Image 1 (cartoon, helix red, strand yellow):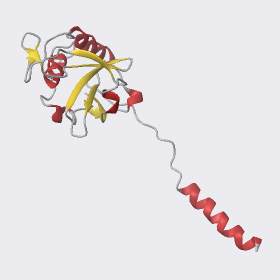
Image 2 (image 1 turned 30 degrees about the vertical axis):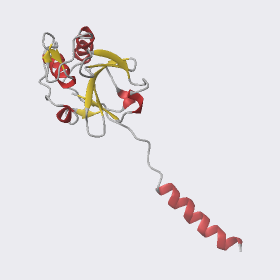
Image 3 (image 1 turned 120 degrees about the horizontal axis):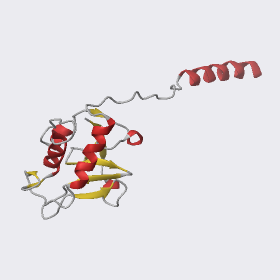
Length: 156
């Protein structure tokens, strides 16, 4: 009786070990921006807090929508980069980044269908142009509203 149980137990143990995945090692994500240039992007974005929101806007004088803000900040940084104009395009730009690997200058893209975006500036915060009648502002990823939204992170 014990021999009959020993073989199935041994097989189950071996098969279970085969199904165990090795620890996930994620390679560093390449970027168009050096760490200094990425930091410059964050500082530039923070300097635009308070600029009025305007649908289709892409300048400090005319106001910003979320993708216009991102395009402006990347285009006028220490290492100019031409960013896509729409949130849907931004959602596929650069490389995906895990939340625990975020650095300043990365993109934060909200919604299961990429409906809003901002620029990560560190310490769980991001700068974005949220809505008509508002202004460019600094918010927290763990804020009541934003923590409930599907989010992806991209490194240009």
